[in-house]
Image (cartoon, rainbow, N blue to C red; front, side, top):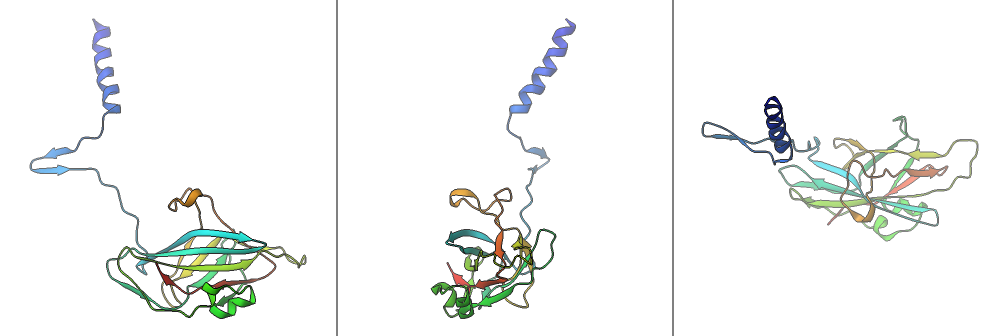
Length: 197
């Protein structure tokens, strides 16, 4: 008889583990567990990596800016970009915006004139970074950007992120593989203007 008393509570406990959560009621108020939403940066927009291309030493990393705020966000020009190494130190890199990026390679989307972009809440725009992976100065170690410190435009609030690109075009995830900006000894990156999507 003692065994039956022990087994019954165990069965109830095991059965409850597999059951979906049930909202508790307190008077007329239904209490439902909540999941906290991601925090929107001070700027009202969030920047992340979207996709990457590489060919013959030329690299392109597309950036995506999403309006995560509640008001329209207007931007004209180029993101203000700094690259950080694995220790969080800023790399000594020349940033070549727009037509100046032709010093690296002539890519039409980089040399196009900036246009005003108005992002409604939930809307997004893209920009891109361009560089070459060339290492021809063995007197210094190659430069590798591990994080991107960025403002939508110069003077706007900054944010720092690790570029991550999930396989097969899936949405960005915090556990997706990280992408490094392997500049070698070139010391320069090109930046494209923001474009509405």
